[in-house]
Length: 207
Ligand SMILES: Cc1ncc(C[n+]2csc(CCOP(=O)(O)OP(=O)(O)O)c2C)c(N)n1
Image (cartoon, rainbow, N blue to C red; front, top):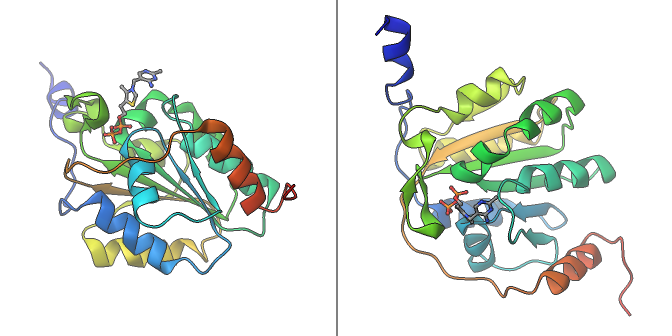
C-alpha cells in the first residue's frame, strides 16, 4: 500500500473534545434572539432541537436523510435578512454531499450549518459511518468550497464559531464530535411541522 493510501485509511485528524448534542443544541438555542430559523435533520438532531425548546421558527425534517442543509439553503435564499441555522448528522450529510458545493456556489452569508458527528447512524442502531474512520467532514466541506469550515475544539469554541458565523461574509460550517447519548422525540406530524414553520417564518397567515 502506498503512503497516500495508508493516510486515506487513518482516522481523520480531529483534535476535538467529544461533546453532547443536547448540550450544544441548548447552547445554540440560548444564543438565539428571536427570528432565526433552525432546521433539524432526520436522526437525532431534530429530537434534541425539539427538546431544547420548541420555537415556531424551527423545522424538523422527517424521513429523508441529508435534507437539513438543502432546506436551510432554500430558506436562506428566500429570506436573506433572516439568520438560518441547520443541524445535521454526519451520516445524513455524507448521503447528500452534493449540497455543500451548491451552497458554496450560491454562498448565502446568512447560513450557519452544524454537523453533529457521532461517527454512527445512531437512530437506526449505531452502525458506523465513514466519518468514524476515513471521512473528515470539515476537509470535505473545505474541498467543496466552504472556506469557513472548522471543527469546534470544545463547547466554548463552538459558541465562538457560532458568533463568528453571524458576521461572516459567506456560509459557515461547524463540525462537532459528539457522544451517542439517547435523546427524546418530536411529535411526528409532517403537515403540522410544515404549517407551523411557515407561520413562524411569516409566509402564511393564521386561519
Ligand atoms: C435514503 C435513506 N436511507 C436510510 C434511511 C434510514 N435512516 C434514517 S435516519 C438514519 C441514520 C441517520 O444518521 P445520522 O445522520 O448520522 O444521525 P444520527 O442518527 O447519528 O443522529 C438512517 C440510516 C433513510 N431514512 N433514508
